Amino acid sequence: MKIVLLKDIKTLGQAGDIKDVSDGYARNFLIARGLGVLADKTALIQAEKVRIERARLAELELKDTESLVKKIDEQEFVIKAKAKDGKLFGGIGSAEIIEAIAKSGFKLPSSAIKLTKRLKEVGEHEVELHLPHNLEAKIKVIIKEE
Image (cartoon, rainbow, N blue to C red; front, side, top):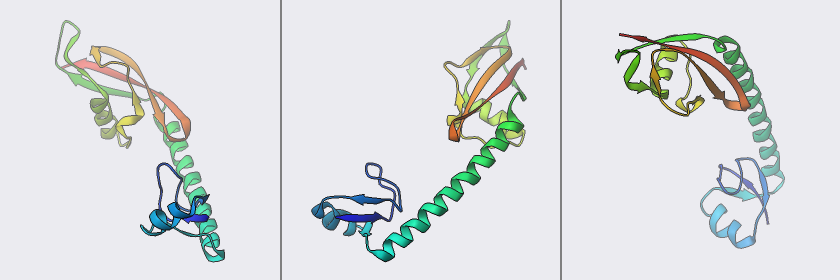
């Protein structure tokens, strides 16, 4: 039975996708819970509209992300932390870096920062950012002693 998904379902697809599923799964689960409808002419037209809108939003998000990469790439962010003889007491992690970036006016999710370990020394550190649409940027984090 062909159905049009009304909501995103992790194991099946996104809203607007047309899927061929077993009759029982369609009737007893998807349609019964309002997650999908029978793929008739009206539902197919609506699904096409949803796909077009999703593509438009993805294109806008890509442009915004590209703009962010151009602005933030090679920027320097200063973080002050308690240290002794150049060694930090606690270390600097993703949360502290995101906070420093936010103070400069950039909004990023904490998942964008890719650190293999916490930064534990005073000085300059290069940090990679992994953004949506497989875009990347590199920033310089400068840790200074308080």
